[in-house]
Image 1: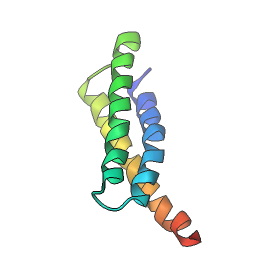
Image 2: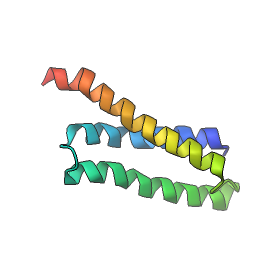
Image 3: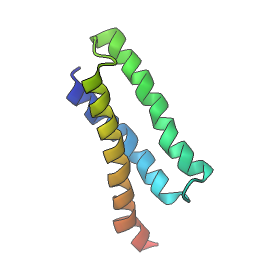
Image 4: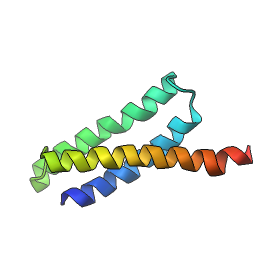
Length: 88
């Protein structure tokens, strides 16, 4: 599995948590959980990726993962504010 494919997986893993983060109050318990729970899964996926595919903790892979994670959180928050919040 290459670094781009893994970043796409990270994006889709972090997206629902970004939606949850957008619904939560800033710096509340749920807000913190929505940011940190997917990080645990991403670290476990990186370890699995290292053991089975040989791509683990390279700088490029880490950079792509951070960008994918932050982008997913940001886009999910925008999506929530634009579409979901108006229907309530």
